[in-house]
Amino acid sequence: MPILPRLRDPADRIYYTLVVAIGGALMIYFALVPVLGLNVAFHFYLMLWITMASAFNVSSGFSGYLPFGYVAFYGVGAFTTAILVKKAAFPVFLALPFSGVAGLVLALLFAPTLRLSGIYFGIVSLALAGICRLVITNMPEEITGGSFGLQLGSRAHPVQAFYVMMAVMVAALAVILWLSRSRLGKALRATRDDAEAAEMMGINVPRVRLYGWLVAAFFPALCGGVEAWYTNVVDTETAFNTLTTAKTVIYAVAGGLGTITGPIIGSVVMVWLDELIWRQFPLLNLLILGLATIALVLFLPRGIVGTILRRKPQWRRYVP
Amino acid sequence: MSAAIETRGLTKRFGGLVALDSVGLQAASGETLGIIGVNGAGKTTLMNCICGLYRPDGGDVFIAGERVTGQPPHVVAHKGIGRTFQVPRVFRKMSLIDNLLVPVLDRRASSDAELTERAEEMLARMQLIGLRHNYAEELSGGQQKLLEMARMLMPDPPIVMLDEPFAGVHPVLCKFMIERIEEMSGAGKAVLLISHDLTSIYRLSSRVVALNQGKIIAEGGVADIRGNPAVIEAYLGA
Ligand SMILES: Nc1ncnc2c1ncn2[C@@H]1O[C@H](COP(=O)(O)OP(=O)(O)O)[C@@H](O)[C@H]1O
Ligand SMILES: [Mg+2]
Image (cartoon, rainbow over all chains, first blue to last red):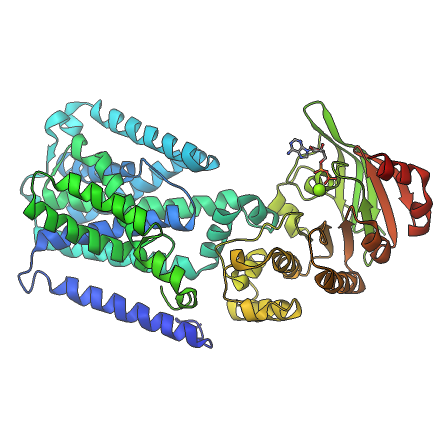
């Protein structure tokens, strides 16, 4: 079996050339950040948001779900790593995979809500995230550190954490790239467009939705774990902050749902804009970011990539 | 030999309304069974019960002699049944090629390239090949009906159900569709053809079932149905 599909279609050749070019450029750039002495923190969070927005795109852009409580996966992932490292003396590298597993377990617990659609799904998801936060807040202080949170102590290693975040991002993008062209991806999109019709065409809709949901849950949970390691502290206030969901949604939508480049470009533009605004107007930063978001939704409702592809439908086949 | 498709005593209620009242019918391979009836007679409900979208309140559905009543739609689909919809239900934000691939995604034995090739053949036959990379939502209503037919035929199902294929379709396109439907029965498929338009049904069907208020009021060859007083009254009285 060849690793790459036979590229009999010239459009496929352009597509994969773009994938390799964009992916390669991203990887080289990020890999060089600590080497060249660029701002590690800024780029760490850029990669985190690219991962979050891209994984969210699997839920929203591919599957048609809007999980308003998306932060739950991130928060549970953060606490899993923190508790395992702090209380069970796990090495960080051993704890991180458990964060991903915790995200999957949580996704399975939430799976019955996949029967809901539209705004109902969104609201229930938000409520469930609130419940997760309550559960962790009310766990014994010896485990979760209570309102002070958990300090990971001397485990901090920003550059290592940076490269692990990079690995998570690359893995997420690779999985999503595969998904978007796979049969599962087609089944997901068909289900998004018309679940009943898809089911009558032989698609096992509940199963397909579950698979998409697991992918969407796994990566934010890993992000939470890596971020806990990077910042060295975890508390319920920040781990379950609604702003995390909001930013994920905004970045993904800004770039355009449904394509792979959309959430990447959206995150790059918006994180950079956020940083710029924050430096210039530290006090008004959220207000200005909110206004920028409103402008974006008003003038580019399909996001940057979505709008371009709307204008140039013939490019759809070439753009990852 | 058992019929390709058969229903026995199929009943479906919506609240107090009896949409299907003990409907029994069958169609053999290579046969086109016309199902006629005025709006609201229960034709679409019959189709929805057969393909598993609705769970009937009574009665059974058999495919090639096997009882499939109450099975989820994707299981029934894999037993060899395909359908189109009265109002087209295409996958709007997917290309025509991808629309056609949906019913065959689980065919592990066929490679993506083989399936894509077959999809292109089907699109060519429906005269949609030039639009293969467009999104389905960019097609006209009539073209969407053709796309649905192509999608339905992708897995080569032995039974097909067409719900009002000619409704709101340009006469030239109707003629084209009629030829495609003749090919389906010619290829040995059992065709269930729903229409409230009698002319096309009479042309295509070997047998006709007339539904009214969920009940079968007449059944037989085209000649019998054409002169049947109950059918005439149902149509004129409506
Ligand atoms: N999902 C549903 N819920 C409630 N009533 C329905 C539903 N589907 C069909 N009906 C009713 O069942 C009857 C038969 O409808 P239908 O099968 O669509 O008729 P036809 O296709 O012959 O025009 C109608 O009275 C319709 O209002
Ligand atoms: Mg109908």
